[in-house]
Length: 550
Image 1 (cartoon, rainbow, N blue to C red):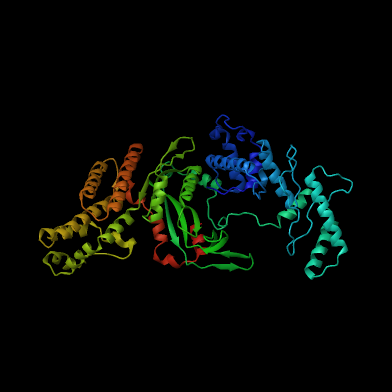
Image 2 (image 1 turned 135 degrees about the vertical axis):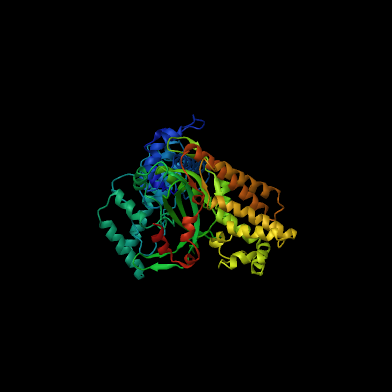
């Protein structure tokens, strides 16, 4: 979910009374219609896309928090001070009193919320003074002005006593002298309520999104102009995402007084913010299924790979906002990506015209084949030994300078070199000659044949209305083998079957919508990112990553 500062949300929400929901049990608010303008204004103010659903959730959370604070007992230090007007509109007098007490304890001047505030909340006016912090930041009160509430009277008497003490006592340390001198300067400086509030605000650390500046997110307006010039075929895309490893280094910039390459996380034992290096950068891109168009949408530095499903959802919303139609999600088979696939399996997204649809998820075919290759490594090593034999079956190729490439590989990006029609043809000849005869070798051969046929469609296949029926038959044969074979990779087989079914459905829809086109199978992969994030990238500096993907 996009981070929205409370002060911005409060300011804009105040202009939309139809969204306040002041009475419990009030009729259902049509956020889809009434909240669209608020979401657009929020997007414009914070520079990031805010959906109607995110604005609705934010409003509901604020309202529930205010009502919870109104029911609680005792003093409450709250960050809901920007919503004092909302608490007053909801009739939450206790919440208004607590917020007012919090504002007064900070030395700020509370706004007039249009209703008297009860003084049933204890207020501590003795604010501790830190070094280099102004003692007095309040708006000066005229001597002949009477206090309007008991709280104000108590605060005024307390402050008056402190002022007399400071004037009569001599400073005993340099720190006290500096504070006293600073207090006189502030008292003698003409001020307004706005200046006083601004001065006090500068003394407190404000809540912030730690990774906000490091993120690379799209400029919606500029990209919308670019996409408007594309053809209808260019706009049919798949969204793929992958993690790029960093060198785990943190760099301090003296000029900006900022640490690069790390983020802030909440400590497990003590609930305080701690720095942690960015281990990976999540990169999201879109790739046309019908043409060569592709762009990188965003890059997010991560301290942990757990819980970035909302970022994928955010990028789908980005793509829809700039005018693209996302037909599929593609990723590798990491544990986190499996979790994201489960989260988004039932999620519905909204098009620009308001209609809802689901985006199917598919695992990248290169990673599927590599997983089978790694799992069956012991069995496939038999083929390597077979190729090294001086068998007559290979003589035809060797006399012509051809090298028999069979076996295993340790680099996933080159695994496709093994699963080729030529390698399968060699194994077929070896099987006919009786060189492949044991049950274990035959099962390995059948799996190799299934994955080679799988690669022939996903990697080098060209789908059109003329050959699609035959290719569907091949995919059904692969699915039948994966269902019937007693493999030791049940989860992998299940994920492959889901990918095949999603692929068949998507290709059928596209060929029906665009009957005269030819679709390249490899476009449903993370190939664009894989070429950029292969092994040489594992030690790359994060600043180079940002420049590469921007």
